[in-house]
Image (cartoon, rainbow, N blue to C red; front, side, top):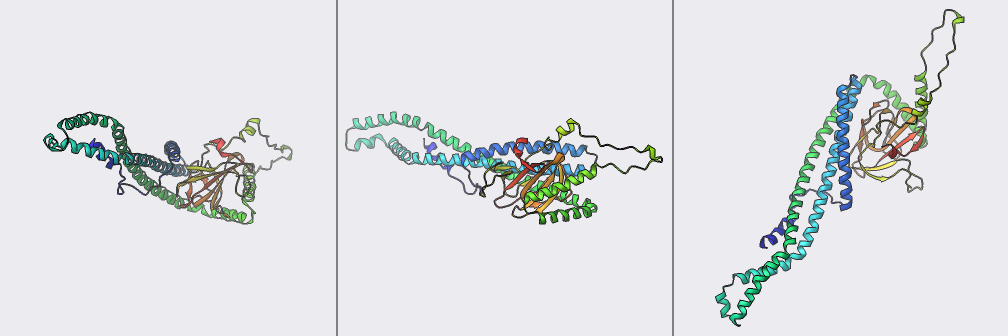
Length: 400
């Protein structure tokens, strides 16, 4: 029993072993742990698929794009592993605090009782005979003590079990801190590799930057003229439709030698299967960042209007990726939304990502699903994802 009481010290928090990690509410910590474990597994799977695609790609542009997307997925995997380690640490510390409070209530009476019993048990019987009272009373007290000590030991079995649980929680907290340090190291390495790859991509594509610069200037001019974000998306949609129409035009037809040989070319109307394909959402659609959903599609805003997207609260400086493959139509700061990226997808779909602190994508870039777009803000980060079909907002969560 003395060992059990002494073991209480094992639950006293060690300031040197702890990190400056904010403890979460247990229910919130369990939700974060489940969400982070799922996100880490998903990011690991995407990274493996993108790495395989990069290895099998024969086109240099597609290869480097897949490599960048794979590194971005690995960055998100490390971020998710950090979130999981923080949640496990928070749960362990909360449980340790609960055990410590319960043991503190039991400690004082048990210490007094233990001290009294140990003092009596060490007292020689000969000295007891010299005290006032009969020897018979002394022998009776010793007999009572001999029967009481086993009862006390039995009643402190639960206490010893709590102490064992406390030691296990201490080990779990240490393991969580070790996982956290390992994930942070991996995150720094992967971010450095992604930065290096993006720098090499920009250098390799410097020849095509003249065309991209002109497109970017035009996009910025449209942003200045647009009254709001909806107007900007509409203007970019019109430009995109014009580009598609021009791309679909056939090449010049040579004039026949004999005028009688002229024929009228009739464009075929889309077949039912083609029309049906137009409503299919972008392939491999995914959320651009990992985190907690703070506002869903259609949620009531403070202004009284309904949300046209989904707002996610990620970790500070979290990696943001392209929700699907497509072409960057706009990238830059815009009127209270932070830095935004608008991506045109096939069949008239458009995605909008707002709240970026930095943006790596440039107008005209062809992205694969998962390509790095930038990072979230370092303070109070909030990333919004909108998905639109022919300019009309739709709930992106239904396509996950």
